[in-house]
Image (cartoon, rainbow, N blue to C red; front, side, top):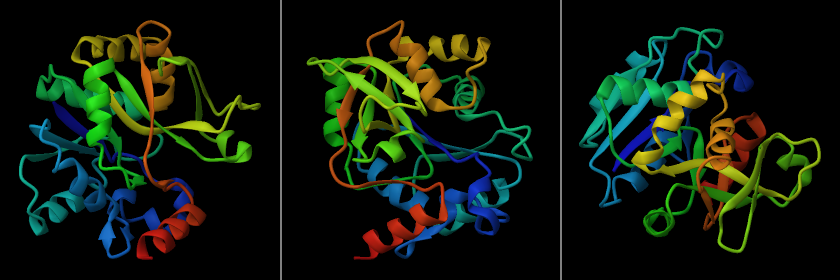
Length: 241
């Protein structure tokens, strides 16, 4: 199984904090967000290689980060974009890595701005049992759910509906950007791109779930989507404690 960490965003909502630093390289409780993520991914026995995809603007920073850290089997990929205007988008970046590295394997995808407590072991066991799956989290707020991707699942944990940023959320159960995809479903990434679903990762999950079984599992522990100053501060407080 191959892991891809998405780190090619420009973090525009964080203003000056990410003007000259990639969001995954921001520090939370004395460690970068990326280090928090990789500490968990490196412990997964099924992962053979890890790819971090970033952009041309921040590529040198990730190279420098790599020299200071001792994470084996990690490759930093430059998607060659320079700004928020010419970004490839989450799904575009996944496809870029798949094509460049000629990957044909099961895939673990994690957003580089996801901070979470789950160790992912049970999630990968769930994936092996069920098939392509996403990690879900109950944010317990309809207002917050409106800003995220809301999933509905049946008794078999299969996703029956997925809506990005719904005006009227059906629940507070949202998708984190933690996906496990069967290699048989990877061609759907190219298909989704062909119909214009390159940017938001959740749009791809909605596309795939309409055509193939996709399952959802509840994340254990806390989860932070580091997209605003408020979420950054909340994560710092929680992880410092």
